[in-house]
Length: 220
Image (cartoon, rainbow, N blue to C red; front, top):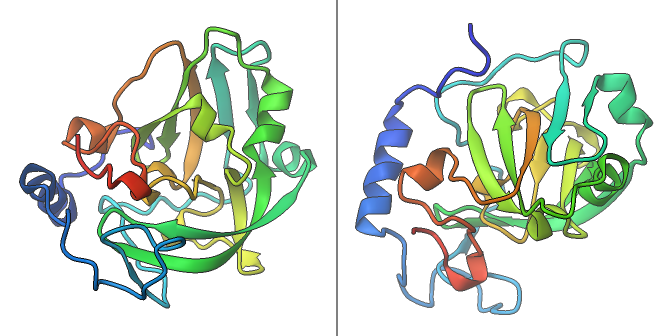
């Protein structure tokens, strides 16, 4: 299987394109979750589990096969294998996550490499403004460099003290908790730094270019 082929046109992707066209889930009322406006973004409701959403493909990538290529407008491009990734400074964070399909989950404990530590190693050039993220499933999504570099943003290998499972993007996924979770690319294998914004998979299909849950930036 071509690991960078375009994602399949699954039932979920077709549904979400329709949702984008209809601007579904916007302004559906203040009673969708507990009254905690400082923590729960508008239009969201809390869940206890962790729903699994993907594009119909869950790549089976072992740690031995996994690679992360970091390139583009950087001073020190690199391709990391698992030992090199684990040799980077390791961090832990506890964050909430918010999905564009309206669920949120509090208090997720992550372990991995802070994006700020990766950036210190690869040194983006002054003209770099955005990162385009690529997954082994062919998925892409774009984020401004400032969001990629946020304190809570991480390349994670563990969740709640155990290795990240395949269904949730293991062995490594990105987590940018202050943006909607479609920006947190699963099965990540390439990070491309660009001098301009470039739409990824869902952005081409009607989703917002940034995705701030507090501003309900669900759709473009």
